[in-house]
Amino acid sequence: MADDSKQKIVHGFLPKDETYSVTLNAGKHQLKGDEPESVKGGKDTGPDPYDYLLMALGSCTLMTVKMYANHKEWPVEDLYVELRHNKRHDEDCENCDDPKSKIDFIEKELIVEGDLSEEQIERLLEISNRCPVNRTLLGEIKIEGSITHK
Image (cartoon, rainbow, N blue to C red):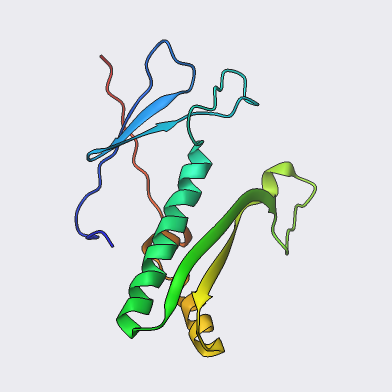
């Protein structure tokens, strides 16, 4: 996993002749982001922001589980993760009639191949929920915005 003490920097660019198609740079890696065609102006030239959020959680989950299994020398073969995101009411919703009372809900299914005991499988599930991105999403997050005008 990445060194948590180093500040991560990602740059994004949305040129004036594009509606929503953005170019994102993280170090030497360049990615595209866009809205789906179902959004007016979206061209679906890349994943949408929630796709990237789920991909961050999924890649972190798989890497964390693999590191743990390797450390324990467990016979883990292929690993898969399926993530689903939607907005829904919490189970103990007090204002369920209010559409604003919906919360973000992510379902994460880890699929592990290998000759593992039930205890090992349960432990891998526990470890998957401890990946740094999972902890970030469940923890307190502060976002400080600023703007530069040119």
